[in-house]
Image (cartoon, rainbow, N blue to C red; front, side, top):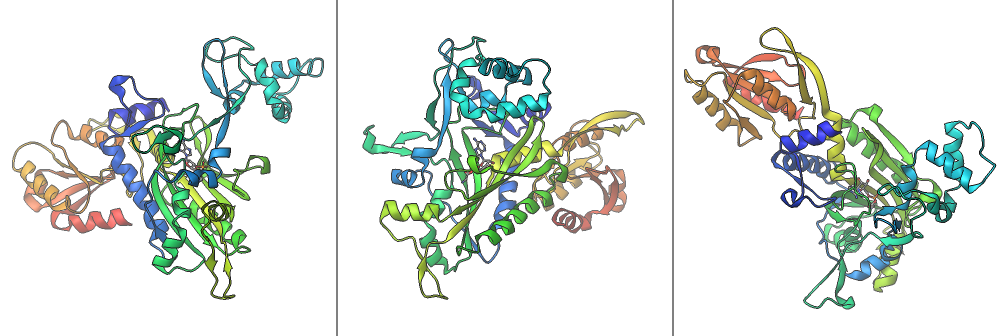
Length: 479
Ligand code: GAP
């Protein structure tokens, strides 16, 4: 992971936010290559989700009426239990404190909790299982933990509920009547607009509404680069269906969403489904599955697929006093649809694609030896630069010809021109940022107007007539 974070910074994918001031925890900035790749990722999602007959798009505002978050249940339920160390004042999310305990520590806690019961040799699996079973005694167990920061034992406060929504104020007066929240999910902007969108677009159930946008959560523990941040982007779609057809649509969207990650190149063996246990379901969900990716630090959710039933629309009807019912053509009656939600993190998926594409491998040098090359085997659709153009040397008219090729391609695709250093080094620099093709103008070009096109993954070089280059590259990039 460290190598990827370092590459991301060095090559301009991702920087720490406000780095010159020491950074702001849980916030990251996307550099020139990062923003391009993130935009490509969002565009792929947008195309897959909205370039179809039954899904419309929306871009709702981040600030919404505060009653939205009462209706959605976020004011009451969007909380994490948290503890403070009375000694060093460090603050922790309770579940993370428990997750990060070693098996040895878990065994010690079990022994203290139930003296005499766990003496002698116990297998690791059994320790973990017995520990999990006792997690409902967390309020008691927290006082047996040591603080990871200062090492003191028994210094934690009782667990308290901590709401993850960021608060701010609208207007000049900072009193309780002016409180608004930064949205913790984009979904609510879809729910409150559902009927507007349905009537404006003349859609009939089943249909969906998709949105990409920023969401904010005051996470207690941010960690693992872009995985858990305080400001992030979501790509969410709510699909409105007739109650009774929800199980069918749930399975349909599950398959679509896993297929999307696979088609864009994430390795199948690093993807899996995780079903939420009934006692771990979000307050709005009847059933939920996460798409998980195997990051270097372990499996982590990149997208959630939820059956949210009629929870959100019913609650908005109740809290706003406005009907959220849809008209049913068949029965000529009204009903509140069920909602199947697909909710992907743009930033988390970005990180999964970055991690998945990172390879270190032996490659031949121009001098007949071998060297290590770092290559991002990104799907060309996601790659920030599609083609790099090099004159082999800076003379004999090669730069001029290369510049002509650049000018021809630039309106179509994102290209990069580089004339500095040995050509082998230029290839390596492009491999490292995932550029799928490098075009080199050499002495043969000046004789027969052909150029070499080098493929990033196979490192094979084809000779292509410069006049055919546009067609050759666009076919390759679009396939
Ligand atoms: N509307 C449903 C919802 O928000 P969620 O499981 O809390 O569900 C959906 O979030 C997705 O948003 C996650 O799968 C993840 O990719 C992303 N996400 C959630 N919290 C995040 C955070 N703190 N940092 C980065 N991404 C996050």
